[in-house]
Length: 257
Image (cartoon, rainbow, N blue to C red; front, side):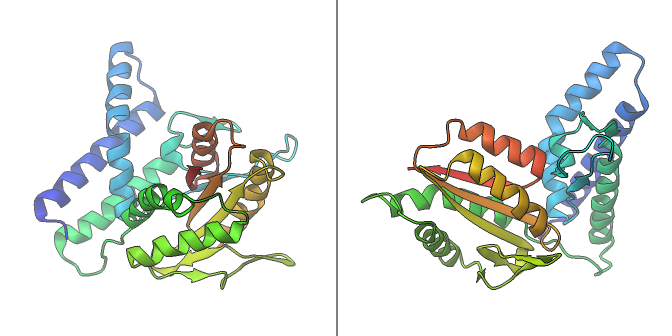
């Protein structure tokens, strides 16, 4: 539970971050001031993002290309794309909207209205770390041969952390088709999808599958975590992870065998 000083500190950070974002959006004529504000935003983006997440106010923005241009629908985290524009549209207004929602949560906590409580999205970060540490030792005597082996390892981590999850029980219906994540965690509004990257099931094929899965899952679950166990076919796991986090708004763990 946050104390009064912590709540006040978060409110000030988010208010200051909001002012800085609006200044950039509206334009800063002075070069030195523009650089100062940009550096301040860079230094505080992660802290502001965490404060927003812990208020339960994080938001993934769905971007649809104009019909004359075409292309894939994207789901992006505005905090990962602060100064980028998509189809001529800035994400800064979405960030301001998200900051306002988070500030409102902390105001209610400060005033002890009893109308809101902090959720626990930080458990997702803890889960990511546990998966990165714990899955590979499971296969010390040999690599997994099928995806279900990796799913079993993920389930063991969920049980060890005391996270209540449903395995292959829920679905996101989209049109005539239903999409089934490998796990769902109701307490975190989280869907988890597990992939085994191996010969014949390469990074490009997995990415193609994820594009459809993620779009469907996000119609029902605000948070999606992708877990990939790689048997040596992903050349640049860092790039794959960063692009999915940035462009699709998901969390991703890639474990190398």
